[in-house]
Amino acid sequence: MKLLTKVPAAAMLWVLLLTGCHPDKLNVDISDIETKPVEVMRFEKELFALNYQDFDKQSAELKSRYGNWYEYYLYSFLVKNGSSDTGYKKAVMNFVTDRNVSDCYKEVEKVFPSQALDELEPEFNNCMKRFHYHFPKKRLPEKLITCVSGWNYAFAYAEGNMTVALDMYLGDTSRFYGMLRYPRYMTRKMNSEYILPDIARGGMLTEFDNSEASGTLLDHIIFYGKIYYAVKALLPEAADSVVIGYTDPQMDYCKRYEKNLWGYFAEKNRLYDTNLDALRELTSEGPFTGAISKECPPRIGMWVGWQIVNSYMSNNPDVSLSQLMDEKDAKLILNKSRYRP
Image 1: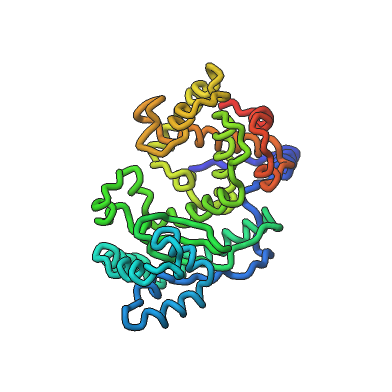
Image 2: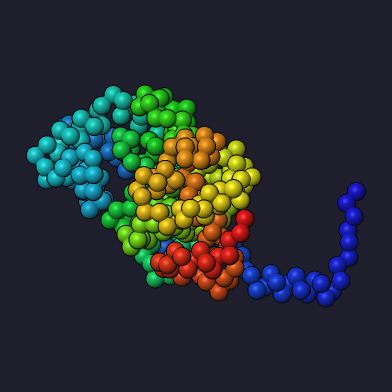
């Protein structure tokens, strides 16, 4: 039986004062936020309906419906000069009639029927409402366009629209990923639960690039720490493991050895290292971070950066998410974070 202990009124008031001074920045009220619902467009359905006989008419309709985005789709991987290219028709029809690509499209139809995206739509719109709450002056995308990219990319932000290539989210056991010999550390994240986190991360990377970073390890891990913090703000119900793309055992490793990991980064002035090889070892994708151990998750520097940013935002309650993203001084964030695992 659980015993209930009566809390003195003075103590309860103190608790309320503390929580009132430190509001949860990742749990904002969006009930009164009004944004235009994002239109979901299934471009892959229209693309794979093309045929040789009616190609000119059908492609003209695609250009009219999708505008400049259609040109982006074409020149990003299909045909260099888009619809004006002399090889335009041949390139498009070769793509949609390719056996592997057309089989993949059929698999997309099975995994992502209309109902699946209907269920995703309200979550995506809530994500956009939170983005508008935190960044009211930023432009919101008008459309979420799904496509088949022939495994060229998973996400793109182009011509004011969000693009998701559904062929990159067919599930970790998809035969196409085996055919392409994708490693396990990649395929386990190629399923539908990663669509929204990928969209949120991709959108934040588009809005806040890393071009001004001075090139130290600290600059890089704080930048990505801010990105993951922002993704969590946009998708507060997403598990941390999904936000950063770790397995549960990898998350357990990070929590168990957080103090040791911080010691590794803090010693020998590593945080101010500008050696590109060292940066890549600690921030690159892979099965693990070999510089530390085979049990250590990849991109461990980014995880540590995320913890520093979490500490910074917790210890600086007056700093908004917008102010965090605009702050370029990684050393200032570290110092004010008082991060001590």
